[in-house]
Length: 173
Image (tube, rainbow, N blue to C red; front, top):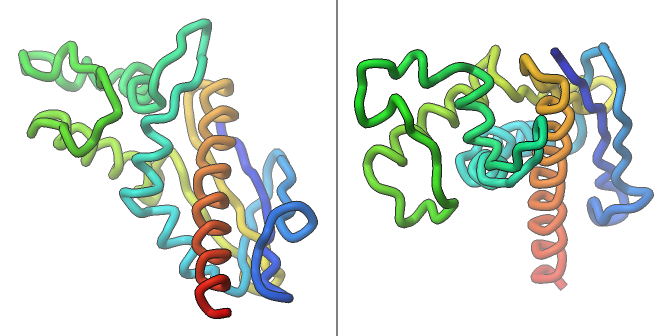
């Protein structure tokens, strides 16, 4: 399933502050995106900082609450790919304390990050610079996952962007 979320950031008058300045609308189909800081937003969407925040958010899919990272492992049958590798064949993330991850956990996180942001990955943010609209596209074999993941990603990305934009303005004055 593919889910599209379109939104626009309004940087007029000092930046995005929520409410009327940040418009989001769920749509099915279509491809658009854009804005004053489009390149910054797209690069942020690919950053390990944002993606990690998303991967370690817990969501409930088919009555199972778990990290988005573990849902991805299950939905994409990654355990089948890891069959024969005793370390990975039953791997799941037990916690979200990234700074304490061992080599294996970091390796799986790096792989999931790439799956997440690659050109045909789980999440893709694009922009139509002519009209200033972003499109956040989520691909998943599960509609429930696509909806939840899209919402979490949108929230984490826009909250981070708004926080950084607001902090930048406050230090300027």
